[in-house]
Image (cartoon, rainbow, N blue to C red):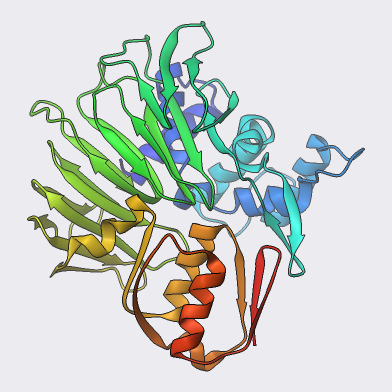
Amino acid sequence: MSKDAFFSLLQKYVNNTISEDELSVLESFLDQKKYQLLATEFLYKDYHNISEGISFDARKGFQKLENRLGLNRKGKIVGMSYVYRYAAALIVLIGIGVFVKLQLDAPSEVIGGKNVVVDNEIRLITDDGNDIVLSPEKNDSIKNAQNQLLGTVNKGVLEYEANNAAGRVSYNTLKVPFGKRFAIRLADGSSVEMNAGSSLRYPTSFSNSSNREVYLEGEAYFDIAKNTEKPFIVNAAEIDIEVLGTRFNVSAYDDENGIKTTLEEGTVKVFHEKDTSVTAHILKPNQQAVWNAKDNSHEKYDVDVEEFLAWRNGILVFKKLPFAAIQKTLERHYNIQINNSNTTLQNRRFTARLEGKSVEQVMTYLNNIVAFEYEIKDREIMIK
């Protein structure tokens, strides 16, 4: 999907000429951080407050938005680009309602002097705005606003009805927090295993579309049901991965520069969604394509896939990784926060395979390799 299409849908929304199907597509755009722009940060910092007795003031919010974006008396944004103008309109029109609910309704607490989002629940955000908590230990039924059965939760897997045709294309979003993993079987029979701190936006049915398209933030392992007439496309930031039927892993966390696509079985095509000058790669098993956001480079490597798939079994594998990268993995895996003041440790590389270890055991293991001082308190690790 191109940015031009996104702008076109925004214009239709502002003009109130958008159809229900187009609105669903627009919402799929908004699930990606690159299209959210400053919306989440702005609304979170200025208006989202979970304290009792404090509510969101829409009128005040619009006034502050005008001041923040440089809106002049004629209603034009001074010195702002095309995309920011329509993003501002969108924030006002739908951000105060659905957008705020989808992005900001998570409990928070102060850890290490910082206000951080803390949500230990696996959540399903439905197309009609329902926020459903899913439990791996509990069987449940998932229904839409018309009370139609879309799928069930069974033994820790969200399963959609095969060939579900529930009318217009609707998109749900599955959010998996730090410290947990979860799986989903899509309506076409494809399976997706999601790693901690990940989000997947997907249609509840593929029956009315020419392809099968989903949107990933974070990391997931895909086992795609073969369908030669409908390619399966994973959107991960600026990168698209297209397949017909195969098994592969995508790591696209927004706090990491590289997007890694690792192929276990079959064939995939990895390409930049809009910039045709970026080399597209056809991957074979045991190969990995890495796109670097800093310089827009795209490389292909031969790899040991076990290193990149071990998380599915709760195993942490590090091969000559700097502690800065290991730190992010530990934070997601154990749902903790690490504050590291040891600059020497930051670039120290480690190799390890850790299975069934507590965070205390992992820190002891690392400390035995390179001595450093640290303290574990509640859900925070302070390295001196």
